[in-house]
Length: 452
Image (cartoon, rainbow, N blue to C red; front, side):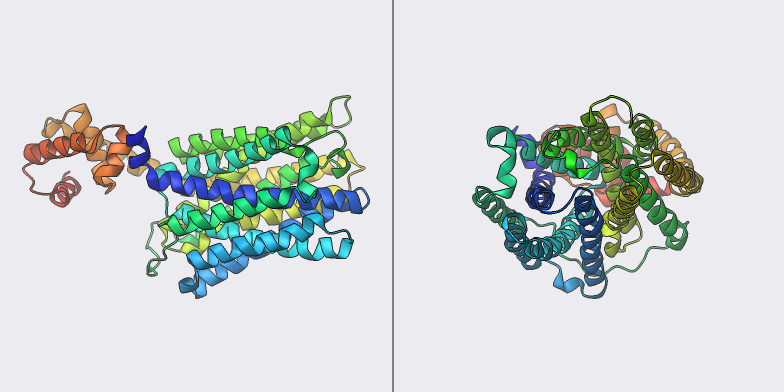
């Protein structure tokens, strides 16, 4: 266990940071939602929370992206810590205020700050190892969802809209600040020029943005159920366990192969149609909400990892928040439409079907551009690797270490990936250098790259 923690310290710290940030903003958002349900008529809560609230979160992410693009030097630990503290002082009155104007003003500002916090931890995720991004995000978000359920299990649902929540929010905010200042993932490096890729970003980016928007809109329309269900028959904290399951599964699948996660995300869009088709059937509303939360886990991981990968590939850090930005916009649009036509299942199904077809039409060109060229390159790389390993008589373990050396991984990272000690890694690296006649790792990599 000590070896695992040592070798994965950076990834674990990133996971903990995402967990704490999402738990903090989840507690604030749920408390605000419960307060809205108490103060406004049925139907208005959706427009305010999932409509206006999501749009303000998107605006917060957009502001962060602009700052990262124009003034990257401003981004760092002090800004992250300040955003967390600012969120605390806005979320508390949004959750506890008695008058509706105060609840709305502080709620809207807290959602704006929530978006900025999301942009910051997504930037941190972009600094994570690509092979662990899905799991870091999925597990961090998933654990936060479980924590929000455990909180009501040991207390009560009303804690989110009572003064009892203050010590919890204060403690989580303090932990966020503490973890931020121990993290190395928020140090901003110098800007890098955009990479010259085989497929220009201007071709891929519109496809990805629109597809993320459509994914989110279709899912939101498919689960257009009244907020009056919340608090009377449903507990969103309990249903978030399904969200946690979707997040963790999607995170693992995306890290195994991004294209698998993308296809499963597309398949998850079937769930909204099932829910719409059964909406008037005598089934518990909890069934639909649970399915919706589970599917949302796949959308959340996909839209985050795809933009984190693009930001790294094209050396454009400001792209990291685009997935959540366009996702929140799509969810807001779905919430507005779903509320407007909530009495007509036909109109809901028609809109979801049209958007789903549009998603399919756009998905295939995106899949071709993102993954099929890579398949050819991967096949060519595998053949070259096999020839190189055969020529130099490499053992199975030496092959594993060589593949990680080619990714320019360090000894501690390789040890963590293979669950071996650092001395074992050094032993095999020494053997690799001897067998290939190289004097350094760089020379070994150059030798492989020049091999035919």
